[in-house]
Length: 613
Image 1 (cartoon, rainbow, N blue to C red):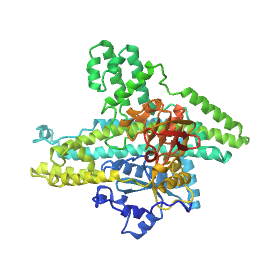
Image 2: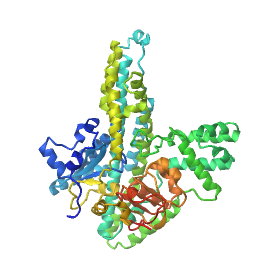
Image 3: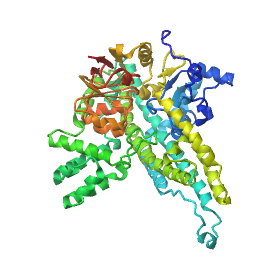
Image 4: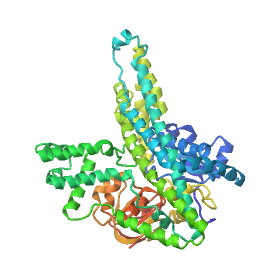
């Protein structure tokens, strides 16, 4: 491990990009690497941090930091204070140039780990034993939270209140209601994320426990063999994509496929289809599919600019047209569920037959059953939170932005994202007190100027390449979520460090990542950094991306393999590739920097090796 060197946290944090001095005020103060608190600075320097590119492939806007704060709290509280996960407390967060760095906080005292085991067995055990019933309750809580969000009204400020305020002796103003609506909006966001982690850590923990048991019996078993044993399970996160396939099939059945493909602009397609009965029938099916299934983000859902399909109907339309072409060409657009399930059952039976000890076999069966029970939640929660809830939430914040624009605080509704949520609350107080007193507010002289500066800072942040890791690499990485979700292990750190030491990336002819899904293929590369770029994918290409999200699902019917910069064996790309039975190598650290569109590469999803041919 001694040869693995990453830069020191304070060296990276202290190396300011010219023109961005003072950027720290755009983010919560506790996110800064410290220079005036020796005890905290020592802790930060002795800690290993890695860049969370899984969630943040680009720098965070000040407002968008809300979800990072939300999971900083939620994941950590469930680990530390609620379920008492034995080997790890929470996950600490810092920020450099708008990029989030995280570090799991390990429990280092064996006696404390021992003490936490009892609590974990009792508390987590209750959830595992009643999983289906509790998950059904969770779904109701989430639907109710989304319903509250959809029903939330953001009031505008009238010149004169309605006379009913007097007649009904209401005793409250629209100014107060605006402040309250903003508080309610933020509160719903934080509440939603409290629910997000209620089951998630337990879902990963069940998987990690099963993997640990398999490795204790079969020390050489590859991680992906374990993941294959819990594949082939249907989850609602695939439903938006299924809706698109059904609409493509319906277009062909009704004979309106040419009308659907008439234009890339949905409004033009709609106008054309409206002229016939069959066209109207198809449009009705389209409209029905939209709620809730088109509340799916075109990105990860973590950024305000990740518009949903409902915000831009041209996106689902393009995917439907792609599926129509495949159906017309006689190709299957179904996921190969049956083959995946057969392979899953074959592998499970093969390993089961090798277990001679009855106790080990009993534990194997029990842990596998638990992992299969909890697995759907690991993918399903994404639809409710990052997609459905976030898609509605961003648009509610835009309504607040419209009010701030009307009062001269910002020049454009989209400028609201350059303010922290606490700054928006302060600005709204300025708006309503100025409205109440009929004087000129202070904000219009403050915020437009500050936002202009922040826009320049964000542009400079985007040009900066965040190092994948900083601080002293640990002797052994044991924290389970770090390994299976982010793909940060001692091996991956060694791979990253190796690439980092190469002066010219064009000299790299081979590199490694995580073996995410088995198989070997050779083919042309298509580097896609956003969902907008997956429209350029051609059949049989190999997708290389920073990360993937559920809205990228249609791409998986075109490609023959996937490679990502970030992620472990339980990340989205690895899970989907296993469901489609195609190779994946994830968590390479640098793939999008090393390979270029048009190059030919060999992807070995069994060993995690990538070769530029």
